[in-house]
Length: 307
Image (cartoon, rainbow, N blue to C red; front, side, top):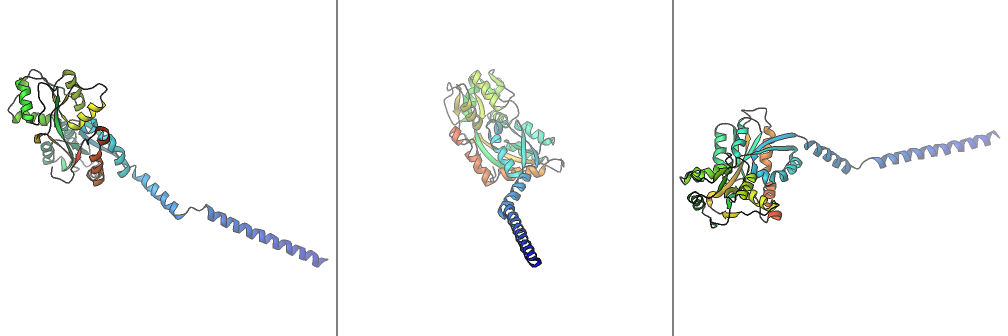
């Protein structure tokens, strides 16, 4: 009897041991199932790293109104953040004011379009180095009569003065204003001799609107004109009356503000922006910007040139 009881107990003990072993194997198997594959861990690590890159802080830029009015900066901003982690913010003003902001150490980088003023900015120690980024051209817009369409800017400006035609100038020391004033000077003409010559003191978009209201002529960059004329709710009565003159090239350059003058500035972000906007990838994007919507690019990239 004792032997039978002992045998039964032995069988029961072996059964419990097998169940326990099976449970341990199942637990081990279960643990193996819940562990993430190596590739998943790698992807998660890369996502974490990517998230860290997206939060480097703010980069402040002073730029001309045309880069904002054309929508180019709104297009580039999220791409720059995604690629570098910097959050680009800007003040869109005339080139003269943008450079003044750089001189005062109010911004980290400037993107403007008046080469002689940019070189002076660097020569005075406020900027580090100038890099060409892109260009478009200036055009004269206005009523189709009495000025016949031409590629001769000197003939157009001379007729405006001689016939005392209405002309709206930006008058804000912007790159466009500097170009206009330079043409008058080279022609030895005084625009104030024209009683119908007025200054808007505003950006390019507002100046175009004012010229349209007054049926006047004005000098504008092509990019802003294309965007504004396409997006306008009311059809403009103005058209391009002068384009193609070699004197109407509109070159843009980017410059980091000198950190030796202002050590607290974000020079790292400024250099990252310069490298990024001059890269082949972004230059290609700039060259394609506007084609689908306006039928032609608003800017032509030319980083790496001496323009």
